[in-house]
Image (tube, rainbow, N blue to C red; front, side, top):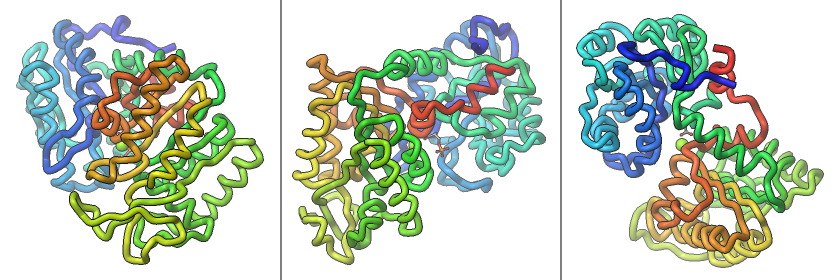
Length: 397
Ligand code: 3PG
Ligand code: MG
């Protein structure tokens, strides 16, 4: 077990709070505040207890460099809103003088957000010096970023060994809820895995086929699997150099008796834009210069048939490019079917991931799922049964 806020003496202390503020954003505005809303109980408890709260997070994947479009500054207003209008200060760097000055100016119960951790290469490298620079800013450390706990980074792993450390309320709640739903799942157990992070998720699929009875593959990953089976995917998002890995996963699935479900038809368009002309085509007829942006009606029917007798569904990653209609059709249809199966008591549904939550909110069904996690990749790795470095560090610390 790990320490929680109950065990931490934080009154009057500077608390370094690792959140996951990697929220979906469009045109500089936060489009889904779920991750912020899940962080607020911890912030409020710390503030009410007289702590000075220094929130740290990554945003996007800037690869160790300052990328202005990946600043956390635009998240300040959204975080303040989640906190019912409480003031949130901002510092333009997560270590050094700018951070120190802002912390010194922080009143008891005050909240400060520091700039994107991943602007420094030391964050993802879990560099001990960078972890020490972060630790130097506070008196204790709270990790509430379950959704980043699969990363062994300075802010999720290294720092936990340098300060008195505890799990935040969201971290606690996530582990408890996922354990209750999935430690001994009702079967058949189906997983839908989609989204755009193809290469990092492919690795997870190889392990998932041993755990689930049916694996429905969506998003850019589905294109990679189609390509690996010799289907021409035109200009679609597809990682051709991962075709061998995809074929390996298909072979492992066969050996493990896991049924893989791939699309049977597709919605294609020349551009990923609202109102772009699109058409439904068979997989043999994807035009060379067009992109697959959603599953077609036959695929939707096939997925729904697969789900009908399943007792548990885990879902990470949308099926199509749901952000832009009409490419949200398959995701919305399957989300509604899963919600109805949940309500009839036939299925336990657990969904996770920033975009997945946004998609379910868009479909109007987030409240109707059994449990919605803030975590995507971390949730999949947890499901595999792996020890998450961010959780393990709290246990030792
Ligand atoms: C997520 O969005 O899944 C987490 O914030 C982790 O982001 P990452 O995949 O870039 O590490
Ligand atoms: Mg994400």
